[in-house]
Image 1: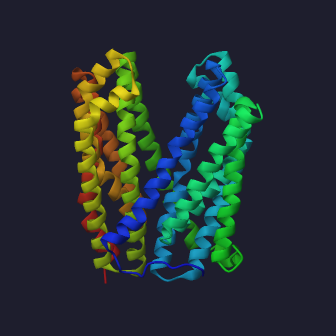
Image 2: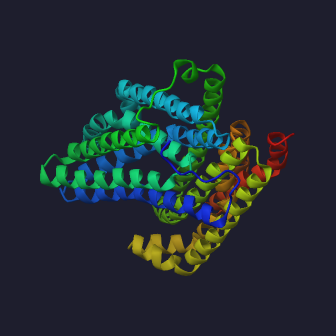
Image 3: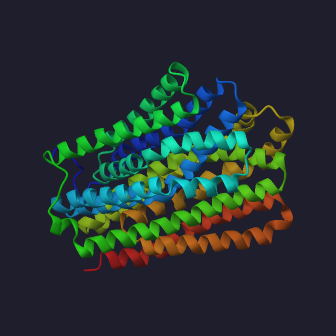
Length: 442
């Protein structure tokens, strides 16, 4: 195989950064797509078109987020196969995940009518906006198989510790998407359809490039023996892992949606202020995701190699670097937060409201470090059932905290969200020793 994966058991500060930094950059290129789409379509001068593209982009973000298990699960399975030095299973992990991605992608294409109908009914937008959403949706939906295949390739490369190649592919797809959007919308005059077509072409070309890279690494072919591909034990393991991650993701999406809905009920100013602060939080989250990815790869490899000390070191270093970054981010938001708020909104009322709740937003990176990193640890070690159950428990505590703090209004909502993040990390930390002892039992 054409690669130079890190040796099992070698867990260092340099390795954490070597994994986390490229993945952070890759994650940060994703929100740029929405900015470019909005900027390009915005130049057409039609508010309905801009609103339609924005709404459709959110729809696809939510839709594809459900299938995040294709990336996360593949990281854990590939990393464990790497740790066991099982070259046949490394190949099989990729092949099985690609089959699942193809099936899910084709299902989304086949169900595009009902999916769009439900989305438009829930959004309640104007007829003009709905028309723009439909124009965009019915083109971009055909990118689903390619987008999900890209999730798999990204997860597989990351699981093998090849985050530089994963970054190159992810950044390449996103930059190509931006260039094609500009060319097709403004150059060819295709409007909203051009923006969707640009994404479709970029995802398809990216999937082709990713699969070609994987094939080259695997000696020129992606296939595996039928008996290996359809191994019942491995298929069952992958099914359970993906199911649990999907349930965990659904619970997380509910938590985010609940936060947004409660903010909306508090009024337009509060909703806008919360949205501004959430933008700050999301930037920090992309960096924390990088350290979670480092934990996924290193803990997965250590578990596959049955190296307890390497596992301990991976958890310790990922948490240490995560807390170091979170402390910097929290201090930066505390000091520069008012300036950043002013850059994102010109409304005096929204600025004042956002400043009032800035301390809570600034505390979120520190509160969420353990939640992000332990998610990576649990995925890498394939402890998906416990991750799922603990996420549901944290969600229950979040809702109970909201009820308790409800008389405090929006302040109570932020406090409840802090409880949610602390509960996620705290519950996983408490469960970790028992799971680790079981995983590395003699």
